[in-house]
Image (cartoon, rainbow, N blue to C red):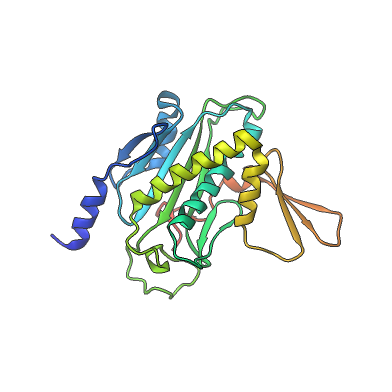
Length: 252
């Protein structure tokens, strides 16, 4: 058996170590965590964390049960993205640049490693409390292609960016802890705490101020003008910008 095959089997059998509020559901490596979480969300409820047993890709989806109408509840997406970025920052080497490209893409040293997405019931109305939301994410830990590192600076893996022996289940465990921190801050201080942390993860642009509106839209104000540019979160979530629609994995 090759070392690669041994690594795949070992990682696929790893159980997550999570805070008690989470209930893990593990799929085999060909499973789809995001789709599966959506199918079982109503039955299994909040805290269900579906993950796929792969060594090269951290793939998972978390079921949430919001307490506010859908129009505002979608802002949970920002808590998920903040937790995802902070999870990688906590596992990275000093000087590693972990950033978010609005709204859904995670960059490490400028290269795409993955991102997040959000699902909700199709029949849910904007002014009604949805029975569930699902935040899903993928992060490329190692490469499964013959691509030479650095050939395409726009995409990368955690292994190429100095994350050493970090394994996919450790990324998921770190996310789970940071997501609890983000939700606690939201409940204690208000959504502004989550928005502030999220905006700090966006690449800095001189003369530009960015805020998150009550419905999740991105508001952009530029120095020297009174106009406010608005970018729709709902429209952006319709097609994840980091996801290859053919492979259903992060773009390469």
